[in-house]
Image (cartoon, rainbow, N blue to C red; front, side):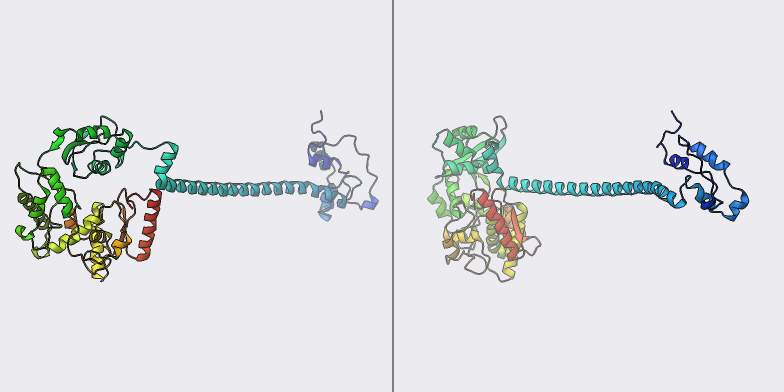
Length: 463
């Protein structure tokens, strides 16, 4: 096998065709070229042949470019004829470089395209994720119900702990008691106890009074405890914040066994307790009270009024401002849900009064029209338009009297409003009590739209 097979090296092929260098003579006088060898010269043979036929120095000096030109052409081939072959060799190398360059550009383009596609995929996935979170947060309960993933409405057996007092008043039904149990931390959801009564087809005769239960009970266990006379707390009254005077007296009667008429007579004259107002609305402090057997209606009312005075003094309320502070605090108690929001609602009331705006509080319109406890945060058209001394959609300034009995937090908030420029607020989540406070009406409209969305997604529960 030859050292370099034909076609192994382009330079070898070229040198194999080189003639004997006699380029010092003109082409027309050159001797006939010897016959080409049968086999191509190797690269080494070609170099040796070229060296042996090197022209003398003088000739080379006379025509320095001639030997290189002649050596470049094979026998019988002119320099012009040989040039295309050399150009083809270098053109091939240039083509290879061009191909490499194109390939590099293509690779760069491919990498850029890949990053673009990757970015698009991330954007799509991000949009899907964000959309998924929105749908889940808005329609979680409906999705769970449809897919059968609903959270248990009731606590599991064996979790009961601590103590909780629950009050049942005359006229309470399974639905209202179910809410009271949830508010006291006894049951897991507001509807758990009522659903249990319906599913088990039970309609027991509940007796008014205060009952000692535990937190985190099953609905079945809660029912058993409510029907056990041993759990009824004699001479104990539990009064939550936000009750009206009439509701407070009903609870006192049911819990203490005192005639309702006696309690109503005891509140007829506020001055008997050092109160200069026309009624004791707002003065019957909400708390849990335990009295000795034989307590009178007058003694009970005295205890509640004195507790209110204690809260007013603790908050630093001047004696001549007690009634005004209780009016403001009673609105705060009815409007706010979360502790921090008490102080923000107080600021809204202060800002609106300072700007000469009507308060426009639904709680006052509902109180004046007698629809405070219909289970809805919204006021009827009739309540909003009714011309009475408590409807702050109609009157200027504060209502005529307090509209509920406020607790310690509401009284303190009335005296110490938070800093802010808010003029509006809306509780947009009726389950959690989350509230949006706004400086402008445009912002308030956006908050109302969010509330509308929540109500639509939750069967208008509490809306």
